Length: 184
Length: 91
Image (cartoon, rainbow over all chains, first blue to last red; front, side, top):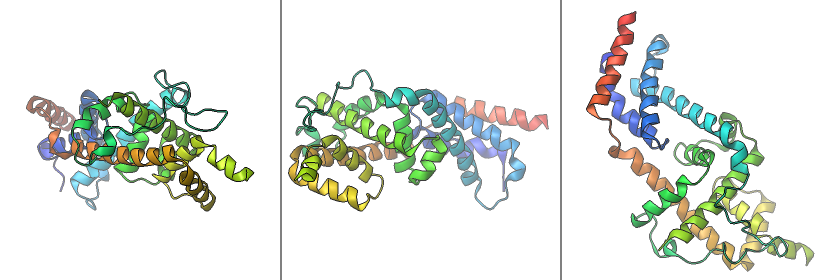
């Protein structure tokens, strides 16, 4: 059963929430939901009723979200692998191979809080996450929300394994440093 | 002794492996490297515990966003349905 007259009423909020969890931009998320409905209309004949209408629409939406990730990653790839401006010049002393003293991990708020309960931390976390390369968030989302195998992520985002791990590593070094610096 | 020193004096590679481990199973040699390094390096042990917590927090943040909070305004929904009807009428 497929009923485009009822799509928005039945699925728009669900699809929008799904998108917002993966794309941090209200306007872009709205556009993606709208585009999903229009794309679905075009291929309505391919709907075979093996999955529910919602599952089918979500699959179309998911491809559109990954297209967005891919666009961002091709624009930002060079930038991502290079250092960002806020980044400490060096996390590590290249003579000794150990942490430099300023960016070295110290105990801060995060160690005393139950991370699953601490809402106070969320504002700082979001602020620090916004400084990260868009590509890292795409990778993290695919990995941790959709539980995609690494190989799928590499293929879909057209990344090499080498780039993938460098991006993950540098982004997390920066994110942790940002939290330590901004935690009051 | 040379090998152990090399492992001890490479916090950059240790943190790289800590991040990799959060996503993927490490190879045996990677696991040995990390185990030896962490045994002697308190800073990287602290890094590991903090970065693991950070992942949990981000996941919770995403899950909350995926919950019932995000809703479209009624006028946006109306526009969306109007666009769909417009397309349907073309055919």
